[in-house]
Length: 461
Image (cartoon, rainbow, N blue to C red; front, top):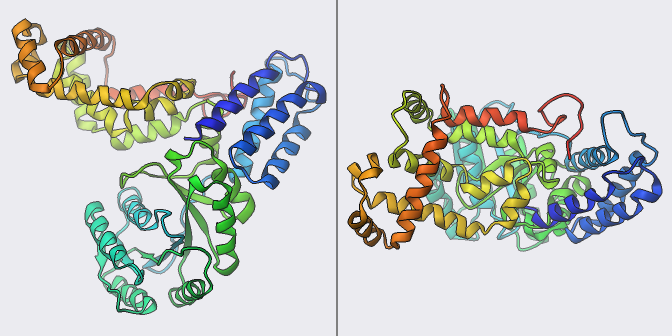
């Protein structure tokens, strides 16, 4: 995510490290590079101008404190300004209303609106413990109604039926009445995607908004459209009182222009960010954490939260107890760890959030790494239970059988066994309660100061 911007900025900011004092002369070239990095990331020009001027104003003449280098001061300033541009802090949904709290979803066709409805429904159900109902008022695309019904089933929330021959306002009003009678906490209303800001369609959504009086009106926009995303959101905001934005497809956006432009241009906060196609790939938007990732300092807090949420705690406790008792680390344990890693977005997803590892994640061949993890799991599945529990019995003939059964080569099996042995040695050093979750918590100490990891408020370089 935002690889191009991250690479340009981290490379550029190294230039001021080692300077005795920050002056207009010695940061001029750096500011020019920062400006070019932002423009290449498709950040809107007014945002770039204000950003560079704010950094310059704060940086010039700043004295070097006793414990810091100018480079650290400058990076802290850039980090602070990135956070300010994107909105300071996460702004959650305001669901304080007599149930059901109605959330209206708007956006252009192809932005991922219907999928975002399902993702948001899952988020509210699992993390906010809300009883959620979804309904489609998109009568122009019958497939959208069916799509939402299928997605609702997938995420385990209720779907209120509608059809293409109904009036959108009648659909929404009937869904609200049903939600009220059945005591739903939240009703998510999907609307027809606009091909562009078209007057008739905008008039319809204005009437729909007036009829349902939502507590939240969210604009769903594709991050990959760059600053156009912010401009489209502004056009919508002129006719519809938006309360926030959901930025989709951010995992495929190497630039970052939308994330850095939306708040400034629309005045509306980005509330959620879509990080993939899976139904659980929707996260609250945290400007401070994203700024940290852009500057190559990781996002450990999100990694810890992900571990808390996605790691099976019972299995983790049993695994920790087994290791503590010295019972060893067998191939079934190895397979379990691979599956846990996959649940957390795979190796690349984890590396991207770890301090100092962002560049490594960019340099690595993500597809090859994920394929390699999948291959290891297939090889382990081709073994007997006895072989998984006691890898020492795997002889040459067994390796040949395992390779044939998994569609791999004997050297692939040997590589897996070698990696397992190395990991087994490492696991002997870990003991105590908490398993992988405890290890993740320990990462908090790796956070740069000022990002939740210690005093001083300055990131280390």
